[in-house]
Image (cartoon, rainbow, N blue to C red; front, side, top):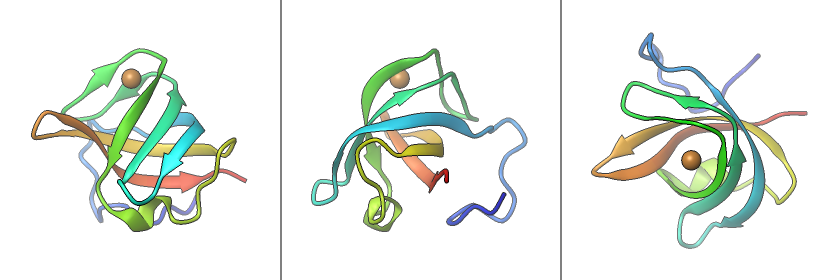
Length: 89
Ligand SMILES: [Cu+2]
């Protein structure tokens, strides 16, 4: 699987999470995902639908409602922020 925008060496505690896009707001760099279990180096939570901040607008430039995605989310200054995201075909 090829991932764009992945850090060269992801922290070993970080795993990709699965999600489905419910809403996307490119201008405000936010995305709403129905997500599965999340476990990253700074964040852990069970499945739910919620809004995330997006670290870079380019991460959501090709994303639309209904897309299945895999993503990494980190706690950055108290905000759940997506740092990597790829659409699943
Ligand atoms: Cu959540």
